[in-house]
View 1 (tube, one colour):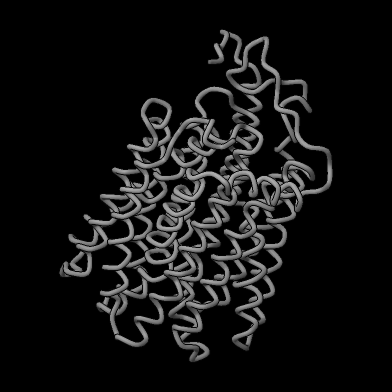
View 2: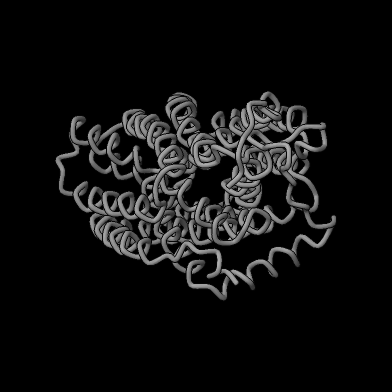
Length: 421
């Protein structure tokens, strides 16, 4: 175990970098939440059905996840700053172009393909890479802080986007998002050095004898991503983490993130009130994710995952049977919000412990593919169930049962690094 010294190596720079990445992740989270806000306005403006809109959201979510491992490998060979800046720029262009859309395929191309690819490079793998490079101690807490950016993004952007959509329609929403993404691209380019060593610093918490992990030579990001996957896929812990994270995405981004506002609309609640509930969920997610990071530094992450998935599953199965009053929805938002991204710090910790500091972020990128595959599955299937059944009951019950299964699977993960050999 590395012992820290009293000298805070790179402390100032580490927290400047973490702050810039926090802003980037927060903006990307707001962009990913936009399809949920845009669903009803686009239905009204173009007459596009909910199944089509759900398919575009599902495509974006899936590409967001699929991009993760390649983005992690690209950050190793091409650089964190350049990769993140290009991704934010792509999201700005995508949102700006979508303001001109008139056909369904335009929505698929911008909010499905381009936004999915861009946001996938500014996602959980970015947080994992930065934490592993800039912090030796307090990694769980810092990962929790960075992942809480998604909650903060929802808290800041969702209510505002809903108000803009109600007053001005969908087009002002996408133009505002484009402007925010462009500003964030500049912030990342200016404030994020490539590594601590590139500015003569050591990671926060490093001692005098700390030797940084040597990154692979430039180029070969595609090969590196698949070679790392090949090693990891031979192990049981990888598939258990992949499967549990599939359920994580299915029960959060795909179901609640895409369909919660529309579900509340089915119950007669206005968009602004439903968006405010998601923002409340985001506020408590900020608390829950920070607490999860702190707990991950101190307790067995497998047991934490068991608790998180179990209570998530139970809450999803209870929600459809409530009266959808403001009180019951507020209770759900608080309870579910505490658990929204709480799974990320324990999952990142397990990936790093099992697969090492260099391979860990790339392996986590592949695990995150499972997360977004699950989210895409829920986004599409819940939309189709709603279109065919006229309700979301079955979608929520199925999601709840899968979460209980993920809780059990989490206890079966072997934490020893020997399992990755």
